[in-house]
Length: 326
Image (cartoon, rainbow, N blue to C red; front, side, top):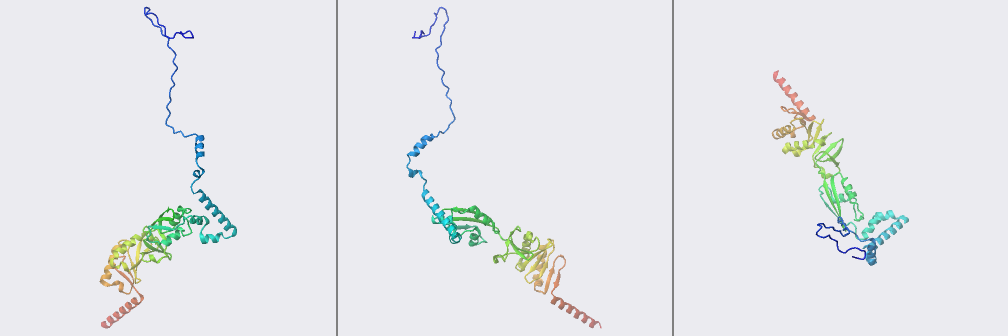
């Protein structure tokens, strides 16, 4: 027995009784271990504070902080001084805005602009449209604003702008291709292939483009170009195409002659004009207009001199006929 009056070993009855009585010893329940999902545990704030306190002060201060604060302080002092002295506007005109000037002093001025995708525009036109010059710095340049400025140019379909530090800006442009000129109410416009107006005609570079005249002629400029191709050897002698009532074309030749084409079969009528010129040199005659709207005949309108000469010739012919009759 132990000190509490209990047996250290279980008691068992004799085998004769055939029964066994057991006394179970008490065993404390085992703790169930709960396995949690993986959680990355960060060290306590106290340990972090303890480690940070152990770092040298020079390592805890961000790099170049002193230089940045010095430049910022100098820029603020210069700006306030110029503003109070009334010289800020003169300074901006001569050196650019103060923050741009400070960035240039730090070696981050805009020194190179790379432009790609231009065919009709010139480099100086792109720079002027983007508002770029030597007074601009790269850190304070808003590329979205530059892109929006460029896309407001009628010749520019889309633009992309990105910075390459420390001193370069890269601009990529997609231009609208000038397709023809359109004259309406005395004004001349440059248009794209779909008839969209690109800009007013203010540049002699586009003077050689095909010219269409009249209301909605810009929307049918491709039809006119097809007529030019049908003209073959006479293409270079056609100066313009006028859309009449939105239905048919009149061609203006280089000698001032008008060629009236039908609403349907206009290309065939142009082929007839080519044949008339080849066989009868009709463009060399004193003719104001050639009407090809009827497929089985050609109607011409003579100049006043030619009409008067023809009238005199007919009159003399009639007189000679009367003399013979008498």
